[in-house]
Image 1 (cartoon, rainbow, N blue to C red):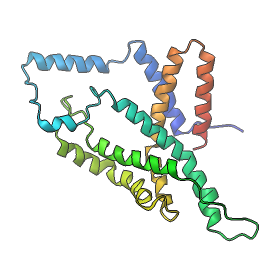
Image 2 (image 1 turned 90 degrees about the vertical axis):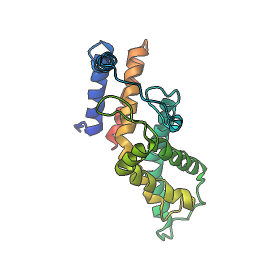
Image 3 (image 1 turned 45 degrees about the vertical axis):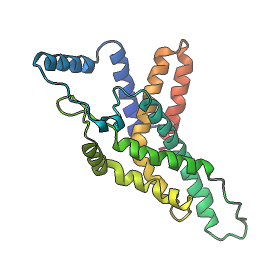
Image 4 (image 1 turned 60 degrees about the vertical axis):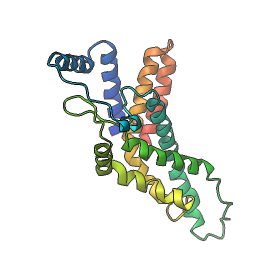
Length: 223
């Protein structure tokens, strides 16, 4: 059977090539930012005065923990992409349909799912307070603007993907809402692509990194 690469596999390949180019010095984004910053200094642009609410805003450029936090959230999403589908198909669906040859099992332990729901709820707040680049390459530091942008773009989907099951203890009737989390699948696999790229650059034995990369490709084909 001939496999045709899907969107995610193609995207990961492009990112891998772009990452290798960046390591070889082809990426000019940092140079552009540096040049732009120097121009601002030369033109006498004033530095924004720090306000009290700046302490609650997450700046991806200077934060020491946002990278770890995003990695943790991506792991939660990745776990759910397989666990939630399995649970809906083989537990909720079968237990809701009478079959004399099938005995309804004991309720599954949902402690991990509840913990993930709590982490994703906290992540909603984190995202609402995470700064982003403005057209002039400065960082947006107004929390009202940050929350407004997040509310328009992703808040509704993120809230529906976690709050119904969090408030009802992963109720079977509302468990299907967790599948909305698939709207983040591209972000998750972009992060996986970065990890694979780092492995290819760091590992002494390239064959090990390539085998891990092939495993991730097999998982991508499932989607």
